[in-house]
Image 1: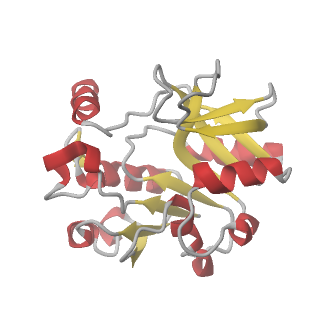
Image 2: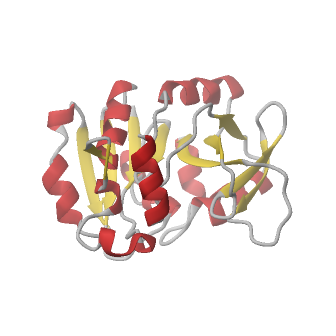
Length: 230
């Protein structure tokens, strides 16, 4: 199986912390977050990993090299200009020939990827998103869904929109290669562009409710909280 791990973000809200280290290389429980994600992939049968790079790319490449130490094969693509979450995945479309995972490389997960894959197959889904619950949804993408898990609406980082739902994008997808045809070249974003389009176009888009929370490190306060809870 294959996974695209998004690892190019600058992590600007972390200030000085990410001036010398890429956000996915921040250590939690003794290892870089990106290493935890690679180990999660390997544990779940994902052995081909595609990683995008932008901010301080040499730090990531020098640490992981070709992935052999972790029992995986890593292919990198450097983005001189950020392509966005879905633009990055589209940039790898020549290498993606089967259903694959997309993982946000700066989130700290402890998740069985095969559960998401099985759910995706049972629902005959085109695009499946792992969901988790958070107290503050203002910095997350919110999914509104039916009892069977089908997503009927997706709101990226709501500001003034009312919603009673606390199930948000956890940053792990499993998707069919056909979706790559619907992603435009250049910059695009899953939350703003692709997911709303798929729902509107009546593709099968489903959400799997994770039992565990995802630990985010978007701000120094969240990073400190994650470190203390890990």
